[in-house]
Image 1 (tube, rainbow, N blue to C red):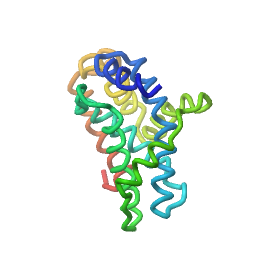
Image 2: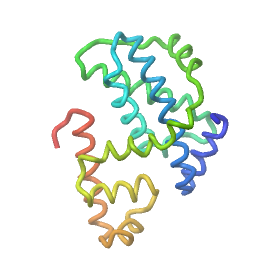
Image 3: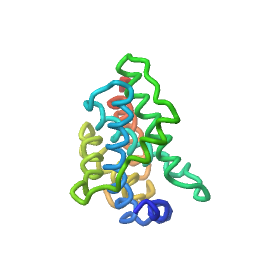
Image 4: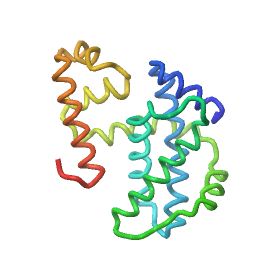
Length: 184
């Protein structure tokens, strides 16, 4: 399964929303297990696992264009996951470190996602965007999940291209405030 994740990411970057959706759906349960182990090694309970997963999926989505197709996908994903786990721990006011040598053993222990966990990425995205207005949520879904341009999203949503950009900016600002601790 992991072997084709890079192919799914490439297809998603090329506009194949089904492939991209499949990638996120398959990554979510793996990220949960990695986050659980990282937080446990830092002496934390499981209360923040979903925060790490949601923030990681959002970062992957928002920064997907920065991934270099000539490099393996998973080290890029693991780096994002590690940073998001550390961000969650920092917000708790605790100084915590996840040793890099321990990260390898954590990642090796992670099994392939179970079929019962399929569709969890969809719920993660839905949970992330629940603080948005219907209009902002529709814009985020059109641009970031479907990969539409501002012009295409505007046509789908009966909005001008400028209105799409403004709504997207406001939505991202609201998400950053909700999940990063900043105020909108």
